[in-house]
Amino acid sequence: MAEENKEMPQDLSRRKFLRNTGYTVGGLAVGGIIGSLIPWKKDQTTNNPPPPHAENFNQALMYFTPEQFKIVDAATERIFPKDDNGPGASDLGVAFFIDHQLAGDWGFNARDYMQPPFYRGEKVQGYQGRLKRRDIFDIGLREIDNHSMQTLKKGFTELSGDQQDQILKDFEGDKVNITTISPSGFFQMLRSATLEGVYSDPLYGGNRNMDGWKMRNYPGSQMAYADVIEKDFTKIKPQSLQSHMNHK
Image (cartoon, rainbow, N blue to C red; front, side):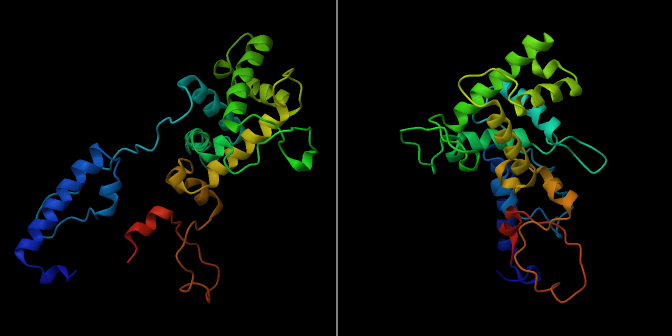
């Protein structure tokens, strides 16, 4: 594409049309995907300001019910709480990350061998049962609420933070009587998924605004380090996979 100062009038008109069309389609139909590909730089030939920031339509449920989502959102926040260092799991969108993972191959155990016979394996062997991860979450979340009602007479999301911690510790310590799944196995799965949601690329629904990376000074998905590799320690602004869409 020629430089802007060399463009013909019809080229500028085409750009204006594409920009306006991209805003309409991206903002209303596909959650800003098209809009993210078209730079919202103010046209030097006009006085029109750039459009407002589009809503993140990736933050939607694909598997959980609203009730399940609230339990996961509360539980993950207790596992990775907000503090002086930065946001917690809830602000980072971790529950959305887990929801999206359960809706896909991870939730279906698509890459795991799931044929019988099923034996109780050693801890180092990991999960050896017939249930898929989405099934384990369905049971685990229901039992979290059941255990909360039985011991504290309230649903999990109605408890104080300390009370929620105690419920989760009961699962971690296998102090909950469940015959279908391992309470500690479910807790470990929930904890691992929480940390993955905090530090995975925002593409997958968590690590909102790359704030999980920013707390760790992690550079994210950089294209190269050639410009800093010979220098002293340099703090680099993190980049997500989406950042490479506009890479030239």
